[in-house]
Length: 103
Image (cartoon, rainbow, N blue to C red; front, side):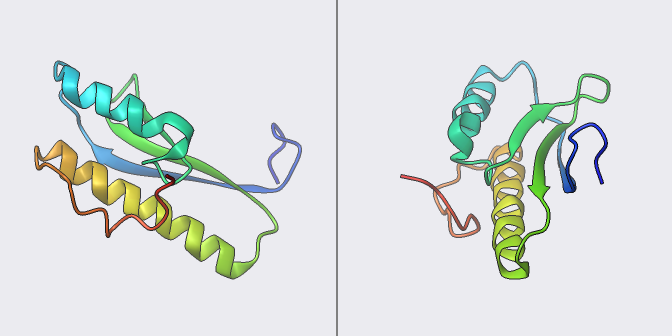
């Protein structure tokens, strides 16, 4: 149980990699992808101040149906894969690894 939140929850943090913080296009992509969870699997993209690592963070409210958790977590993992590809300077047009893009 999370004392701070006052409810049961599971916090998931996926480490994506170390972004080039001088790459303005990448940083803009991250901001745009973070907006309304569109390309972040409903999580939050952030750069850890201490390590400089790009992370994807999400809190899952519990209890949660197993099927809903699997779908939500798969979406988070899909988003992490998308951003790992983006960090590798690959232009990502194939969003098949991401299961819940909102339109």
